Length: 245
Image (cartoon, rainbow, N blue to C red; front, side, top):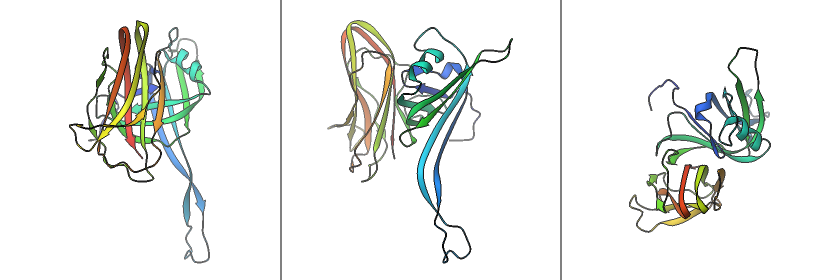
């Protein structure tokens, strides 16, 4: 990916798409440096990586009055854990995505008279920050059971995990419209004999969930999103990010 100007970043916060109300997003990930310097360190400090942490900070224009807007979504998520996904450049299938399970740690609103009403907030990670890809785009409504495009993420080594974040952004229909999303894997792009690796809880309303495998090796190299939909005239907008760490 070439050098670029940040013009079309995307921010998915649990069950809300805050991209259109954001004008600044910052990610950070770090490990504590633990000093292990000793008499055989040849006069130079030695360190080991300690506990890791990550943060997502955002700010933009304040809006309220609907669960999909930043004020409503931030208050609902404050103090809770959920999935957060950031894309530096759009959110089409295969787009670069950073995501994590995090706690909405704070929310700020307000400025001087005459200013555009602003918001800012911080998410602190509870799981590692994952560098992955978008596996299902947010702008494509799904009305029937189906599968998405296969992505080549590579095999998952023992000790690594497959991570997946689901953001259900909108739900429409009657007779309790429900979507159950799962992550499937196979050894080829054709997905001739897929294996289910992760299954999200059945969703009937906007919200989000993040899952990961147990650390066992997965020899498959290709992964896709699949979903089962029920209800009368159902329609779901959702985004999914996938990655291995």
